[in-house]
Length: 426
Image (cartoon, rainbow, N blue to C red; front, side, top):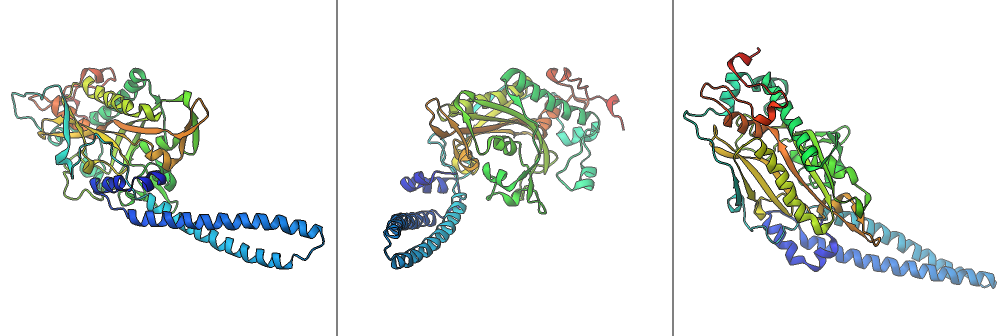
């Protein structure tokens, strides 16, 4: 959420943010409501002050035995006016708060301006694309040949977009999650959280998924609870409505969860195999930091996520998103895209974002500095990383001419077997 005072004093900057992010928000209505709210508040405060002053006069007159009937009648009218103004203020504040939730975060000045992903900038390449002496298979061909997935039965159980990993495929998935969790805990000093996958409407609003993305979420209507689209939601809200001492910052959490997304707006996008799912697994990194250090933290999270791909020896690139490709809540985002040789394209496996104080204001997460001053801290998160497209890249990169799949060295420590002809168990 953007500070209302900032919107009032920087309306053109906010208009530009709405435009450059391809969002729709009625800034004129917000400014008009704000002006009306301040007018109502002034009238309310004046009447309350008058009520207080006259009440003191009434007390004195009563002590002196003077008639106060006229003053009491006047105060009765004032009290009615105060009640009416209070009702108007409540309604106006509610309308204003609802409209403020539709204002996107303001992009950082360094973010390239552009309408869509075509304006994104590749800022880094790591490793080399693998060279094969044969035509590489894609992950679906490899999965079918080696019995690693059963998408038809997953669809039978739950519908399309709900994969079933089978045999060694399931072992690889479990090992990847453990490898990434341990890597971030041991090498990057994260603290692990195991969090709920069902959260309240308030929690979803705190990180910016609601109200904008409600159609993209799975909701349990009877309880008004939502299945999380990412661990970012419960982990960021871990400190909702709290004040943290400055000496506790930065705080770094890592969390594995399944993630659930309806993908309501994904019609026409590539959905082959594991590329776009309704349920998938992800290891998430979340930072809570002082505002002055948040862009340094953004680079740190990016490097932490990159080290996972480097450890797996996968070719990837880092892309800086333009304004039109930024999420609603983000001020600056990097995507990390891994190369999938069987598909012949890059696939996003991590998105790393700085939200500055946008989420902290919505979730009311503050910190107290050494002088006792309160302020909103900055929140950041990034995938460290999501498993489905990572699995695509691993299977396609480590495949052999025979159609089997070698295991990366770092996964062998987790007893991940090679995928061979003899490893097919059913």
